[in-house]
Image 1 (cartoon, rainbow, N blue to C red):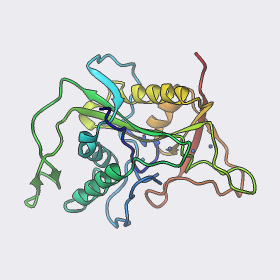
Image 2 (image 1 turned 120 degrees about the vertical axis):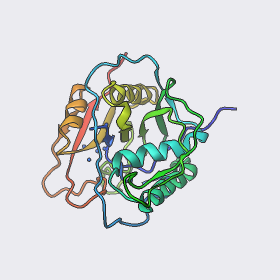
Image 3 (image 1 turned 45 degrees about the horizontal axis):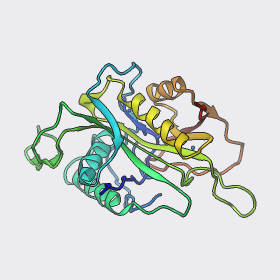
Length: 268
C-alpha cells in the first residue's frame, strides 16, 4: 500500500539560514491551507523563515529527497517549528508542534484538480531509535525532554498547485492553474551547509514539471539574503507587485515583508 504524501499548512518559503507568491526558509508560518493552521497569534517569539540556506552543491549522497510518510508527521512538524520558531519556549513550542502535527494528519484533501505534497530530505546516517519531544531551553530548570523525532529528517518542503497565495484571475476570481507554489522550506540546524535546501527545491521543480506546471512561485522574506540568493541561483526572479494590488501573501509575524518570486519550469 502506498503511503499518502503529506502536506503542511504553509509558511513563507524557507527556513534554512533554509517559502508573484513563499522554505520558508524568515518559514514557516501558515500558507491555507489544507488542514488546521495556527489558531492563535503567539505574543512572544520570533519567526525565522529561513535560518540557513544551502548555496553549495550537495556532496552528501546519504541525503535522499522523497515524499513524506504518514509515520513521519511528528518529525516533519518538529523540523518545521524548530527551524521557523527556534526562540519559542515551553509550553508554547510544544503547542506549536502539536498544532502542526494535527495539520499534517488532517491536511491531505485539496480542491479538485489540485495537487500538494510534502517533500523530506532524509539523512540515512542519522536514524536513531529515540523518541523525545524537546521543549524549552536546556539551560532552564523547566526544560523538559520528550523526544518523538527519529533524527532522520534533515529538511522539508511543501509544493502544491492550490494557488492560495497567487492572485486570482478575472472578475470571477478564478484559481490560477499551471503554477506550482513552494512553501515551508526548512533545514535542521545540524544539517545545514550540505546543499539540502537546493536538493529540495530541485525536486520540487521536478514535481512541478511532472504535474504539467509552466511556472513555479514562492514568497521569501526580503531580509533573508541567504534564501534570496539561493532562489536566484535556482533561476527565480523577483516579481514587482502592481501598486495598490492586494495579492495574497503569508502572514507569519508583524512587519515581515516578502518578495514574490517566480521562475519558468524548463522543459527537458
